[in-house]
Length: 266
Image (cartoon, rainbow, N blue to C red):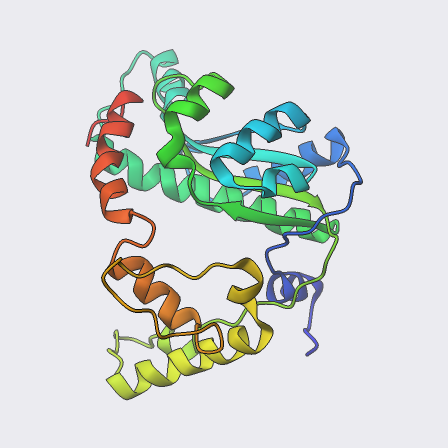
């Protein structure tokens, strides 16, 4: 499929990369990519990123995020940063009056836009990327390794490197399940099942979950009768979010305590 401008082609053909070359990304290019990240919209700019290209640090990161930090050229830790904004406010003789629940919503928006701009800018230079979502649950470790101060919360890890593969773009649920004109429209069960079938077909055909060995296990007392030939996105997300395949319920209960240690009160 052809697109009518290079930005659209960049966005529509991007896919997470998990194989990289040995070529190092120059510091100057990382700075340029991060500067593009800063052009993301929003007022508070409540984000910071810590970047490390050192092998020893990436080896440490592999303990928390799996092997991917070792394969890329650079590891980035994108953080929600209240500390700097509050310092700016204090410079004007005032103090932050926002509740931390509000701050967290706004800060996640800021950091997410920033991170996506980084990924898009990197892609334009032929640099692949993959987000690593475990960062909030290893806040204590990230704080120690990267000297994060209070009021700075890790949001997501990001690995960058020159591409060693060109994976196809992953399918997405149909546009009509996302785009609502004038009013929100709930899906019928038939429409939901059709959307799941469309999502599943490409990923199963590609062997996406097979290649990642990414099947979420069922609880110990449940027999798993779904092989990788039928294991698609629908099965993956339903297992992940319904029965704690990744201990998400426990993580959700712990995240408040983790944030409290970083000086964020919910």
